[in-house]
Image (cartoon, rainbow, N blue to C red):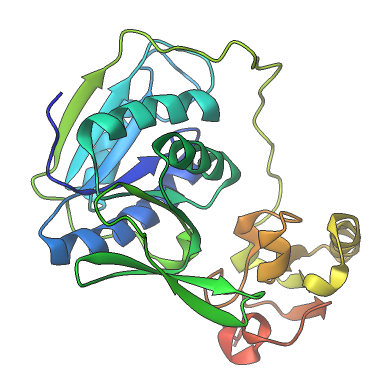
Length: 298
């Protein structure tokens, strides 16, 4: 396979439609980087056409193009089992080494985080985490990332400008694109075999049932912050919220510490909520919980 012009890639998570939707936001971020460089935003999907538990590859490719992907690389390998982060990292890294993109972006989920970390290690390259802003300056990718619990915003770039860089992106900091990708082509990359790590074995895999309303639509929201101390402390908020019939939200520190899912983040780079009752526990009163950042119910 010949090396292509350096482009901005986005790893597309096909495990379900919610994760695919998060990746569409990242495609928008990729277009923002690719356009000033006269490059392409490329969506990379990995999967098997025989798998029935994921979003179909052909359908996902069309959705990505409709939401701004200039090109789609469809990497198919013969595995009907649910996706594994270690295997996808091996496949993605192989493709990266052959085609040398400028950067590869990932949605900020645990699954994609693991793939990003593995790929960066395999490539001996830099990884910028939790990006809320991306831009090009002097031909370099500049990422804005919250630091010190969101108190300051750090600007980071890759020290090696010539090798592929990796970044995980706060999906709620971007919106899906409304412009169809150009030229909007799909390049199929078949893989006959993949070397599966011998010392790792999947024991089980099941989908989590979500029987709750959307955080944005909740009439009662209980927001927790760093003051909850740890995951056990944050679990108390879930019990409290359940007693009130509400939903749990979080400021950035609990999300970064993995006490709560990233989809529970509210504020500037999270979701906008408009509850009739909002209870804030253990928060600093910083930007994530200022009243002017909440959509007021009228």
